[in-house]
Image (tube, rainbow, N blue to C red; front, side, top):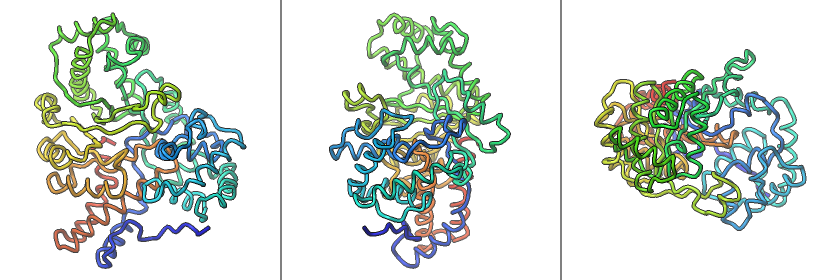
Length: 470
């Protein structure tokens, strides 16, 4: 089986002169710390610093980028260990690993191949390309490494050079793992929570009534009425702020932000608690609550991020058996200009309010996102995520938004990952691609090389620190 080759010039432009400039620029940021302001790593991983149980549980089962393509190739999710988060027995883990290696060609040309090759080579020292003849040897090498102190979660956190790692957390979470990390004198990293209230804002969602009751219990507030519900959200937001949070994250089918008058909002809320609200009323309430979330961000300083335009859990049977985040979420089209107008009319020029919209709809990059960020001081364009965190898509995004909004109005890279070991590979990919884009501007004599170097440094560390208030 041929060896994997991580070329030192990977992702750089093919033109020799441009590639040389890109190489120089990349060298100035290659070893800068990683700032991860949005992701889905479980904080318990670092708080308890328990060794990873096996290669499959670490690298395959939790990563829906990996499992969704295997599923599309005919492999059942049940055969990939996705419902065994605490680890698999050695025989099952090895069987899943063999399945993955046997189907390695399904990842050719995808970002998964790029990330996985970097993980295998740079973290575990694996040089053999995955395949049926190398599966066991690669498995054994990784399993052996995971049994050593150097590959425990905190050791890898330091090795990866992570400065800040933001997690995504339910508003009723007691944040004990974040608190443990903050108070542990032996851990010098920064792991912060992110307030994610989606299910508490959607009266049409399953279990909403129980969710708001739990919200009230966590906030020690009566959510049996609308004012108490708002107070509970404020208290829980402040609880997150007190535990280091700097942002609140929202993901709904759209981002309309039409406010209701207080009487109408209270009326719909009461109907929703009784199970009587129509779909139209529930949708109007959710749109009103996005506006209210912006108002609360002005009050408490949390950055407001938006991840709209995803049809979640597209395949009902998969959701019913395995739950959410199993690779069956599909992008949809979206409108932002009119949808965000009510919010931006009220808060768009408010000092210290930060709004970071992301979208998987490429048609709005230059037509809506960049012009909004190019006018409103509060708006910063979120970097590509999910289906767009691939080399070609990142390039299209950078070109589309920069010509209108420039570099200073973008958020910095967002890895949005549950796969812990993919973090350095994803950030390295972004640095290489931005180095290549800036090199093109240099060789076309649009900017000077020192300006390109300053800009690249800003994209890697200064923009995310500023945009996410880190």
